Image (cartoon, rainbow, N blue to C red; front, side):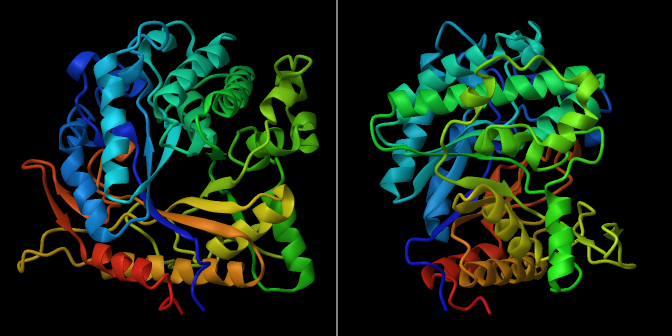
Length: 446
């Protein structure tokens, strides 16, 4: 069995992680630019000022994407590159970069899938309160209007927000990501609500302004729980766990996805968070729950649940170099449970692994662990499709090694190896394996 005939095979990256060109051509600062200026926030005080220099090398990078055979590339737009102050004056050179990138992708038969927000919030707006400011949804809508007006004649696939669980939870609660806050829970929920309103307004912008039929979703984290065995009882326990709010944080599926898709906050979360909830104005949830065309999920791992609903931790687990457990059935149960609840076709918008990669003595990068990781995860995705789950695409994270947030350049996720000193690129063994997989539409995934 192959994957569906029109299955989208892609890879992904984000603006801050690869572009560099910190202040080139009129770009404004992002909160990640300023966060990285603080000592000891990032591994070995790395930063994204140069990163992979994709801003200047994008044509070469697109050629490599074409060599791999990608059918689609999931990119993100740097908000402050286009609007240096976050609102107001457009930076023509910044907007022109994405214009040229889209053209280059299409010239190489690669479909651009655009994410509007992948964490590089404009510093100028952060100084005015960022996501805590009630005007932030309108700021985001203004930005979305600019991008849609410029690119929608060629771009038809759109995502609004990438992983709100992370940019709110890690950025506003734990302080490990920009802007580095350790806020009270009231502020966390307020920032989250404003980000959801921003999502809704951006979907409205895409629908209203797009110059062709648009296909719209978002890309939240897929927080996956899996049954230890396939009894009906254990499946139901895992499903319930996957859509529960159990802790004073936003690390769950339904706090963001339920308002986006179902038009309501989850009842267990409302009860738990009652004293910290922001004001939900009339029309807010209707605005947030704009119709979507797909459910994007970034899934890297899952947790097995025992019969009591507790997470079962095996001893001596298989780990990636990020310290993440390798649990391939996450790509079966995650899409299955998400589809059963939200009734939207599923796109795996990120999946992949950080590996211990280096240039070997033969001049090549051998990464058999990554090949096996992707193979066994795609096998589980294939099973989900065979069981009737409409999974329409898969984006491997990432197309190239890049700046991995607080881990700096320590972690390598890419199909393409980047020598950051010379900016030379090398296709890893996994890139050639992925090329073969794409050509045969996953036929060898067994």
